[in-house]
Length: 264
Length: 324
Image 1 (cartoon, rainbow over the protein chains, first blue to last red):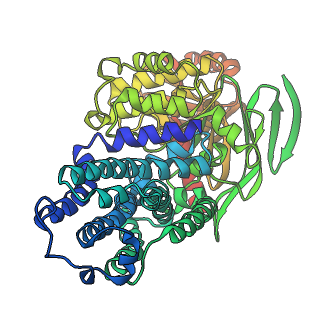
Image 2 (cartoon, rainbow over the protein chains, first blue to last red; image 1 turned 180 degrees about the vertical axis):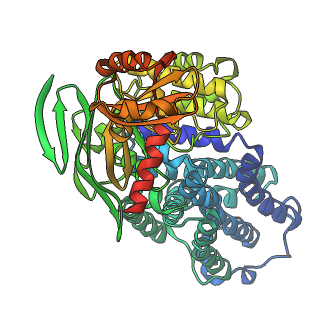
């Protein structure tokens, strides 16, 4: 873990020296925190919803998850849950750009050769790059989630709906699946970064990975997919395996020699 | 102390116990292009070995192979007792490389740059070593400044410090004084000479032949394969022979035929008041020539040795290769 951690700290001190990068990392999670709170507020979370919302307004599949919540509470829970999904995806979206630059960026800055000349292994190098990109995004998401919960509490959301935020379903989504998804996305981006010769190409290709994530979000919003405990469990299990496979694959795919001699 | 001798092609490669770098027919091909072809030499502790050649001659590829950055496609090499291709991590840990480009992290300070690499090389006293080399190379006062604000020369010095942080016994320096002003280049050259005195084996790639001549104990001229290898002085003598210059008071042309009559004189020519005589052994024959010229009425102002520069040797060899 020694060299991985050394590399992670170097990456952070390099990247976050740029205040703009710091701002862009924090911007998306904060936006996704503010948006639902604004919706809840304007939809009357702080006022009276009675009469305005009925159970018929809620997608039937989702209504089953509301247990003993009334229509107002169920609608608030519905709004909250749509954005809860975003907290799972934010750690995927934020670090893609950093990860895309990780290898090809070092090559472009001519810092890769001195780095590869050290006794660092390919596994340590890639793991360091992956963690350096994923950890800040995950932390920013968790902090935003905390702010989200606090905001919902201050807006006097139905206590039943508020309690649902701490449902094992959502907690495991944010605490386990989110980081695993982040590692998946970042691993793919780092892998692409080690295969292309231009940072812009790496970013463009990596951004395609966000599409399935967006599809999942649309599926949930339109009621085509309902995330439940079982799905989360399978997702987590699948992602653990996928991440391990991706890291092994990325290590195999990383050609020190090609990167040093063929890239100009 | 010599411990073995191996005939490698036309080169008699002697391996000594103190040899820290040994190459035997080391080759590297990229698809159909042979970048390095059967290169063989050895470098001992306390020796500076110059690798000279035109662009694309395979100098950087050779250094990269020896630094375990890329794998050879043929032959064998040992660095610090570790075999290239088998103990690559140990090789990387025990050598210092100054790459063609300084390759520093612009956003980080000089101190942070060095600290990062010191940690990567498992240096025990990170702060101590960083401070030591920052002071040695005159960067201490600017240690907290971002490298982005550094001049090319300062970057180069910082890159040299980076290559030395873990006190490697073997150093590969690719164009160490490139881009440095004369004062900084002199500082770096002096420092490289000190490193040699500390018992390190140094391979120096350079286009600066004057620098190679000043610093290197031996040089190899390569163009894919090895063209020649020896001390700069021996190379000069091999290619141009040894020449004595007699400065006369008056035109020298009248003495050429007389000088040529000696069987130990290989060639003689007159250039204004100078008589240039090619001899196998000037120390032995110069006194005879002085006596003879004085007897013939020549007024000798002084006698010296005509020294061809390494640059002349280099250009002559390149010309020969191109001709072939």
